[in-house]
Image 1 (cartoon, rainbow, N blue to C red):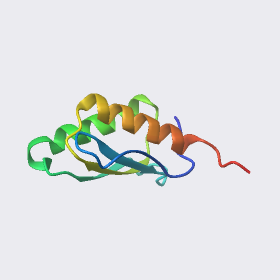
Image 2: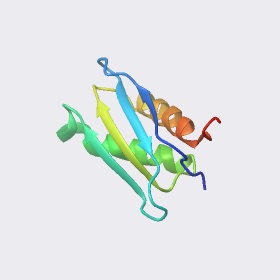
Image 3: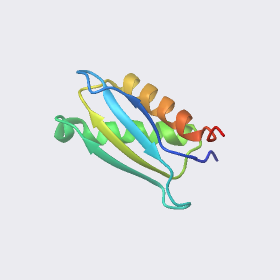
Image 4: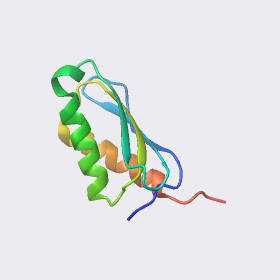
Length: 94
């Protein structure tokens, strides 16, 4: 399992993109997703499923995730989540 060491983020607030912020969570708490999107009624469950699946594929079991969507496609969601999580897994530079 991969552990998040610090907060990480990726993305923009531009149209057809999204901002993803991930932060460490207590061990055993799972993946908690907060989603803000103008399309939440139509695509909210799909967005959450893509975020969760991407983190699980990366071996992340516990995370707090904030997603602000502006109409991103699944491929963009996966890319942004992956980079935000990779940044969060980095050790602090001393």
